[in-house]
Image (cartoon, one colour):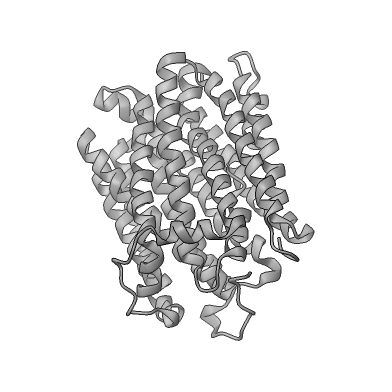
Length: 409
């Protein structure tokens, strides 16, 4: 079963290089927006006189909103067209950043909900475009290039947001990302018409929102892919949400130093996504690659649990590069495998279902991480527990591989 069409001759602006570049740019903006607060949490917390661990609830609200939006994203992409849907998501990102810049907990909670609604749309729209215009022989690498936008966005947030927050105030950091979202939205305008020739205005937006979840459960390999994303994303988001605060409060790092580690970790994610995508295409088994990544992710989690202030800076940087390459590096291969096994014409719908499951995992995982910190009082032990979550994902890889259709990967 394959949702990927044979490569066809298309106008110049529809060639895959243009599509990948545009979707990559949109993903960078979306990921930067969601990573701003985690990278400046200590500064924002001091300003609002609250505990920085509350950043976990901000991230939870983002993914709660993304989960709700993902139920409608498949129909919306097919009705509006993937290009127009991506533009809409970027506009919503700008609004979410501006609302998050208001120095009030209720306003920031609202901003998180607005940002999440855009996050639930940007991935299905991008997956639709890449599956439509991409080549099956290099689909893992194509999706991995686009998915590097997540760690690139995090890397940019880690490198820029703390400096802006210290020099101009933390609200300005959100304002800069809002402006970038508006620019990206405008740049997509000349492209969306030729991309959206397959849109169907007759598709209703109020169809059964759970139909995508039911569809994902009817294909055995998709069922276990949902387990993989639900578990792996918990490790990914807990890492990116709490690593800066952990290094500042327990590792003796300054905010700028911790932001640098965050950026290097995200760089590891960029390299990991490209490398794993290339490996999956060369060896023809994306699910097996996901299992290998999970094993390395579990090892890096145990390494993070062992970090103490006595560790050298070089060792800490090295560990978090590996952690980034695994916990942040799996998504491109995952989305390529997901597109490969989606029913024909349903890539955006199945991508939306995957977003729902991953968001559900985050809604359980991040608050649990936050609550356990109140009990244990130590981030290192909590990172160690992430090894168990990664092992659950490895089990999902094994079961997905057992349920692969013949002559498939």
